[in-house]
Image 1 (cartoon, rainbow, N blue to C red):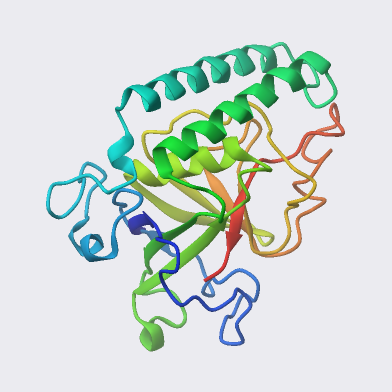
Image 2 (image 1 turned 45 degrees about the vertical axis):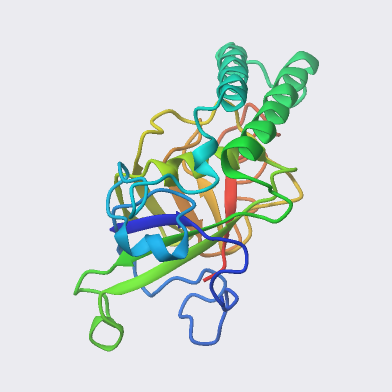
Length: 266
């Protein structure tokens, strides 16, 4: 289970790359078997406050909002959130028609406007995204894990989210999942993926199957499970470019793929 989730500050943590020689799942940063994820705190915790965070309702050890999230609720941020929400609803309505959105001119125009609105909301709510965001999850492993005696129950999972220029809606969705985290666990080892359930204030799937061929489902990447995708997610423990990429999981749409989130880096 996950005890905490937080958005790392730029320059925080000396991370070893995924695929370190001590890693039993090279390219994923995960231990031998799935563990459980611990309950999460807010995103964007300053390092000195992280130890005080235990529940998603907390706003900081001293009772103050973190510096970036303090922008939430401002008129500018509220207006951006309303615009993004309205476009999200419009995209969901289009998707419900069953049209192949990846090749439909009107669908591409509306999803493009949603992506632009989401980029603006991310900037207002979470700050500058010139560098990719990173999220750290604290893990707790059960005693049945083979290396439990050697490495104990505690572990971490750090993911670097995909570039917002490519898939802003997928990234924003996961930022919101982490910010409002309640509980979750890795519950399924499917051989090609480790699948996780997540419980947060994000309860709906993605509004459309956002995907970029510049960021395929390579080994070590994290994607949203299901069609429509999310909020459950998985870690690819092998190259799943074909299993979860364009044209996969169904026969109707050769362009449809699982939405992707980022890559495990520790």
